[in-house]
Amino acid sequence: MSYTTERLNADAEGIRRAVELLNQGELVAFPTETVYGIGADAANSDAVKKIFEVKGRPAGHPLIVHVADTSAVYRWASEVTEAAEKLADAFWPGPLTMILPRTNLVAPEVVGDRDNIGLRVPSHTVAAALCGSFDGGIAAPSANRFGGVSPTTAQHVLDDLDGKIAAVIDGGPCEVGIESTIVELVDNEITVLRPGSITRYMLSEKLEGVDAEVDVAAALTQVARAPGMCESHYSPSTPLQMVQHPELGGVMASAVVSLAVIAPFEVETQPCWVMPKDVDGYARELYSTLRAADKSGVEQILIVPPEQGEGSEAVLDRIRKAAS
Ligand code: TXA
Ligand code: MG
Image (cartoon, rainbow, N blue to C red):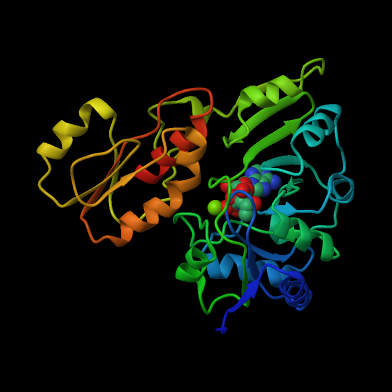
């Protein structure tokens, strides 16, 4: 099916039209504080199947369901532990996804054959207004082709999906720039499955006094991962290599192909993108910069990561996966 994708304004009329389209089982991309998502009615199997088609995403990869507020979570999750309540109080609305045991409200295609569900209450005013006006949950993966770089503007969404979805709401560039932190909660064990701007240290701090442990999924803690664990993701089509600052000069000098460089400092070469030094600023600009470098026509992109610290885990994870 092909569409003339409607570009909707981030105003009351845009939200009204988006809700109308969701109710008709259509796909609508919308901004969140992290990245743009492609939304579908989470209770409508046919609508959810379209998401997998347009993304080229294999069935069985579960989707996150976005809801308006914590009270809506009780309709979708069958069990909300004390730890989950503490994290919801501390971080919702915001860039945290919690995987919890589920009720039967959700279309089976959203969760694969799992008995749990990923839930998130977004803080972006447009996402919040959309979730608040739509009577249900909105299943939404990042609005890019499977394996590609997530979109942080409406134009990025159109670059990937124009003609394939009914509409996109243009809410400007996303504030956080990388996808939400995902935590799985099983009894008192809390596992970070995907790092994000809400770090494991921030999670642990809010769980003081609760009998719960924050752990990090094995795949994230291994530097050299086993093949198969090392899923390539978030990738531009131009080969991307991560280079540490001290090695950059040598790598550039011995290169036999045309290069673009992305680094948190000036580099004497063209094209070059200077990233913010602070990790939040770096994260905010990462995907739009990868997309721009990918379009520049060079044969290889070199990227120097931000300085390592408590907040850099998520950005490093995205760069490693994009470069693998
Ligand atoms: O920031 C975000 O999370 C963005 C915005 C749009 O909300 N969404 C996003 O969705 O990044 P997606 O589909 O691109 O990534 C969601 C990840 C996938 O790797 C998926 O496998 C995992 O979350 N996931 C979702 N539900 C799950 C579940 N029930 N169990 C395990 N993993 C789950
Ligand atoms: Mg994604």
